[in-house]
Every structure is written in C-alpha cells, then in structure tokens.
Amino acid sequence: MAIFDAHLNLLKEHQNLPGLEGSPDILLPNYDGFGLANLSPSISLWLGGPELSSPVFADAILNQFAPKYKRVVMLLVDALGYNQLIRLMEQNKSDFWQRKLGDSKLFPITSISPSTTASALTTIWTGTTPHEHGIIGYEMWVKSLGMVINTIVHSPITFWGDVGGLARAGFDPVSFLGLPPLGELFTNSGIESHAFVPAGIANSGLSKMHHVGTQLHGYTAESDFLANMRDLLNSRPNNRKFVYAYWSHVDSLMHRYGTYNERVTEQFRSFSDAFERIFLDKLEPWAREDTLFLLTADHGSVETPYNPAYGLRSRPELMDMLVMQPTCEGRLPFLYLKPGQEEAVRQYFEHAWPGEFSLITRQQVLDSELLGRGTPNSDLSNRIGDLVAIPHGSTYLWWVNKANVMLGRHGGLHPDEMLVPLYALPLN
Figure 1 (cartoon, rainbow, N blue to C red):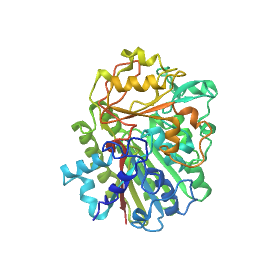
Figure 2: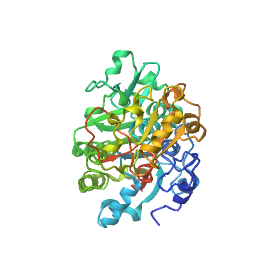
Figure 3: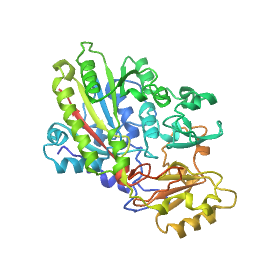
Figure 4: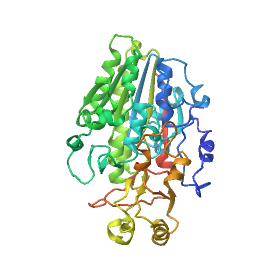
C-alpha cells in the first residue's frame, strides 16, 4: 500500500502536555523518528553525509527507502498539510500525486512546534530542533537586541516595510544562528547543495542564515524554477547532490482565503501539472538514476474564520496584565506577564474564551519537550513567554495593529497544521 498512515495512532498517543491528554484537536510534534526534524538527518544518511543532531527516521519509515542515493531532490510546498494533500487526491483521481502513488510512498509526519515557516526551515537547514536552534515563532523576543523581531524579514516587529532592518542594530543572521547550516556540512562532505527559492527572498536575512555553503538559484516563476532545476539535474556531473526547492503560493493563498478554498487547490494543481510537464517528463535517464524525489511541507494550516472576539485591541484589561504584546504566533501566543498576574490572566482567559485555550507555563513547555530536545539555545528561556496559550479548534489571538483579514493560519497544534506529507518518489 502506497499510503503509510498506520503510525497515525502512535502520533496521536504521543501527548504529554499537562491537561491536554486525549484532546482530539491537539497533536504534538514528534522528534523521535516520525517528524520533520528527522528529515535532514535521513537525507544526510542517504547521501553519505555527516550525522546530524536529530535522529534519522524510525525504521518504520527508513526501511521503505534504499540505503543510499546519489541525489536527493526535496520540494517543500509551504503550508501543504498532509490532510490537505489527501483530500486533494481523493477529490481528483487524475491528480498527478494520486496517479504516481503506485510508484511512491506517502507518510504522515509531524511538523515542529511552533508549526511555522522560520522555525521549520531552520530545523531543516540545521538538522536540529527549535529547542536547539532557538528560532521559535514568527515574532520573537530577543533580549540581546532589546526588541521583538520578525524572524522572516529580520526587522523590528513594529517597523513596517523595514526588510532586513535588524542589520542596523548589528544583527548578523549567520552568527546569530550559531550553528553550521546543512549546505556547509554537506560541502565539507563532498556533497553539492543547491536551493531554488523565489528571487525576492534569495538574499534575505533568513536565506543568508540558512544557505551558507549552498548554491542559490533565484527564480521568477514556476517555469524558470522547474526548467532550471531540471537542467541542473540533466547536467553530466555525476556527483552527490542535495537539491532543495521552496514554493510559497499555497501558504500565501491559504492565509487569504482559507485552507480548503478552491483558489488554493487550483493553484497547487496547476503547479503540479507544470512540475510533471516541465521537470519530471524531461529528466534524462542519467538524471533519474539513484535519485530520490521528496515532497513535503514546513507545516499545514487550519481555517480560522474572522471573529472579532479574538482581537486584543479591544481587551485593554488583558493587555494591562502583560509587559508587552504577545509574541510567537496567533495560534501559539507567548504571554509575558507583569509580576503577580498569572492567576488573573488565567481567570481572564477562562471568562473571555471558556474552553478555547489551555494555558501552560514556560517550564511545562520545556519539561514536555514541546520544542524538541538537545542542547538548548542559550537564550531559549527568554524567548518563551511566562505562559503559552494553546488554542483549541479554530481559535487564535490577534494583536497586530492592522486589519485582520486572514482566513487560514498555522503555528499551533491542530492536526491540520501539525501533520505534513512525506511523499517519496524514486525517479529511476
């Protein structure tokens, strides 16, 4: 059977957050062989690269692969959840991914926490968990800079349009990370590393953080992206290669229209058709030999209909109990409390949103290994709030000083945002 979902029950049983055991709308990340944190260590194993910090996939997954590959091509579709991909394939039997299932294997694996792009991509590009690399959330308090930063565009969170503005505060993305990225480790092991990313972010701070030692290929549209990646593989050099490709449109449209909206689905189908026609069908036989193609995602998403009750601008009583606005994600708010306010904050949440959030402490986050394990980032505790709000269902908080127009979100622990696909297609 091409779809390996027998271990879904195992993932659902892995619940060790206080008070959340058995919650059907909560799925914790798995760092022990069934999660995104295990992907890069497994790729390194297949290519004959170094051992990374996190373990490789569990035998239940690893045994379905060959022990070695000459080339691994990984397409990461931002926000393509496992449940979303399954639904798409069930709705259209002629869909490319459905048609190729007989030659492929499809596993559900978990994202990391927070289930968001900057955290997940840093896990991929370092082979470490958020507990180790310390990039936790879209918005993150950094004590050494004295500010909350946007971890995608690397600017102070209150500065609109100031992309890369942290550089003026002495911020260097490479030294800030403090870990050798995958491309550097692969290069030292004789493995070529390539990354295909939209031209607009090819030289961003996050890209600089991740892509040391990696050959960057900025693209404008799917046509040059897929054709250039095909031509790279069709070139004669038969050396070991890791080829990473990032495609963002599912995430962009999901935020605007919702996870299962027709506009999201049709865009992914259109991309899939182009992928088959431009890339896969035109690969030469030598490019297919000993080559493994992987489709995965950084996270999924959950539909979040607009609800003004979740806006914090109309809740000054709660904001007065905090030392600053929440950080991290609307689907996983980190709350920094004024002294002596914990019980008052708990009572406020229960009164304002009864049963819609569970509040856990910083220590409970660390003890439960929600962010992973390993040697902790030296600033980790400062970057986690005194309390962390775990949303149930489609709830969220909104504290940004602009209109709330997002109908889809991620960052939390709902199965739709936590489960991502590992779709594996050997090309020879």
